[in-house]
Amino acid sequence: MNPLIQIQGLSAAYGQKTVLRDVNLTVYEKDFLGIIGPNGGGKTTLMKCILGLIKPAKGSITLATGLTIGYLPQYSSIDKKFPISVEEVVYSGLSREKGLFGRMNAEDRQRVQQTISRMGLQGFEKSPIGSLSGGQLQRALLGRAVISNPQVLILDEPSTYIDKRFESALYQLLEEINHDCSIILVSHDIGTVLQQVKSIACVNETLDYHPDTGITGEWLEKNFNCPIEMLGHGSLPHRILAHHNHHHE
Image 1: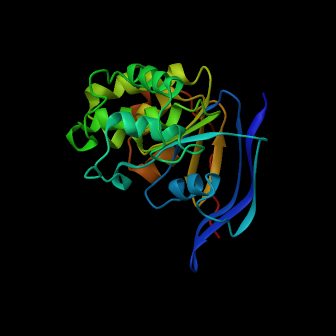
Image 2: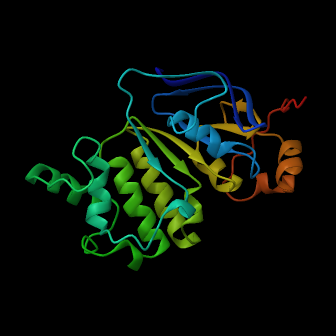
């Protein structure tokens, strides 16, 4: 498997407060990595470092040559009052080389329409984003993130947009996207993440990596106040690693 993102000895801080410390992580081709951890543990900071939005205090992030990344941000960062249609939102995913409101040519229009159809939003092309439900808005933003066929797709807390009815449709879509693209999914929803992903990274200032989605009950209990019995429910995998430890100095 080819590594697409390699993080070595990464530390990040806001002012005097260290948010991430000595983080090492490799993301491979066709990976589906779930990143979990408590609020304030550094999950979003790690994503922003990968995206180049935050400069690390220490360490390095090496991206594969020419790597393209799609990004679905947190719901709280979206301004639903912004006067833009579904079609324009999806098209803006092509706009890095075209400018936000550059004119669509016939090929662009076809790609936008195909993406809108893939997201299940046919008939909403001209709808303003303020008129959409949370699930519809999420799919429009996911369309923006994938229309340029990125090699890596980063999703920050996607389940905060939607109710449970739409959640299974979203994860089915991500499973299809994962055939062509690596996915990094940031979530505090452990149960959902465990069902979907191929590997898990637990972030709480430091990072623990589990290549087979195994996590310990002790860590779950400590960081999420979550009873260990949850691992036996439904179709959740029941794999637990014996060793799991975040070292805090």
